[in-house]
Length: 115
Image (tube, rainbow, N blue to C red):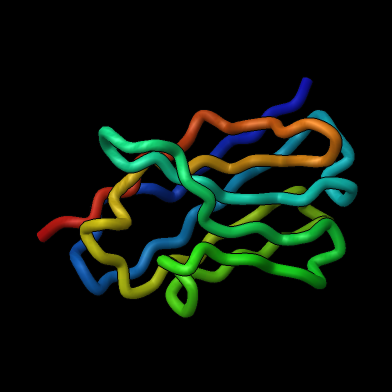
């Protein structure tokens, strides 16, 4: 079955960096658009970034543009999110998704930005 397993979350100070990974299995990874979403405490889930299956197109939420970078490795079925210049408002559960005709979700990894 489809599995998306995020890792790399944790506690980081404001201004710091963190890298997230998502390991995918159970589907043809190179056919799917991969995305990261996040859900801040007490708020709605929101889009963060996406990357096309061929890696030619990336999209970012305005709030993370210039600070976050999404990438993928189609040979290893992995998608990454490099997060720089983190701020307290970036605190959230970060979720990996795979989408084609349907969207699949991982369980998420907690990122906390605090001094």
